[in-house]
Image (cartoon, rainbow, N blue to C red; front, top):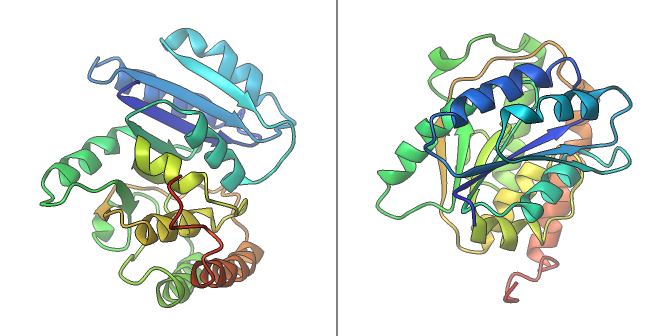
Length: 247
């Protein structure tokens, strides 16, 4: 088993992913981690796969998993998490909105917890000074509104559930993502809700983050997420996730 797996879901990221991969390669060159990097291509129609394969020389262990069709970010992350072998499994966004080096901040916070967290998530809910480039006023409004709904429905106390920078232990990743069903933007909410229901400690940590203009999240995505959150709430209450089974 590796120390660390880094999972990057990618859909038509030929322009943005090189900078992300360069940053990951530089970070791993420190030798601190025995790591693997997994790029999950979500049915890209551009040169994403070729660009990634051309950069594979920078890594000791990098592989590309091809979905074959655009199945959604949730499906891509789930596939990567369940394919990975790391004792710690980090997924981050291909746009490099949060640099991989922020993993150090998450791990340091986890080490100071009296109860070791199985899930550590990056958050921009507080410490606004860590935000490099903010979102538009509309996106901030939609995000705050959506978070209130998410907290009331399934994740009380989690201030920022959908930042694309989260670490799961290998055990938690396998037990959580094997139960996940949401392929769209609410996959984070589902994964965290399942983790809590399974009794895992989830720790929220402030991170540096910068908005990317080419964000794939559109205003209509918030309505889709709302519908998925309601289904997650129903599935939790009816135990459709088989939370009692030893998975």
